[in-house]
Length: 118
Image (cartoon, rainbow, N blue to C red; front, side):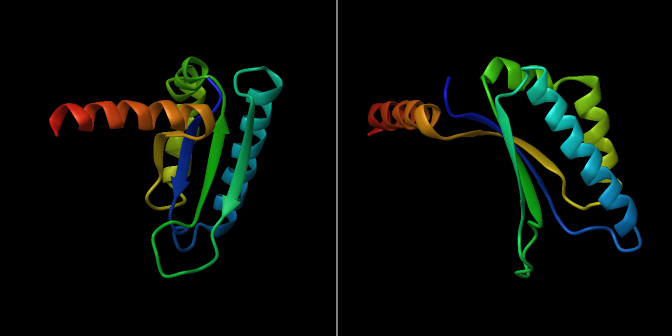
């Protein structure tokens, strides 16, 4: 469904691991590019957050069909990459996310559930 996403967020770089963090980030971008070329995801966006005193330093959004995103998330290559990232940045997290049509359907489910409890 249009709008299914996988959110991969991370916090600050571990002090002393800055050069390695750059290498892992480049590896991550190349990995996601290969996923896109192979049709396993539709696209991806990488974002860095300006310093703000909070925990989130950046994130990547993978866009695609939920079943394909689930396959990516549970793959050995993805798990290995997340483990590598966890050695060079703090607070790595992976979450399902929704926009567009998927957001509309998620909100409709919430509305129906909340109406039942009113």
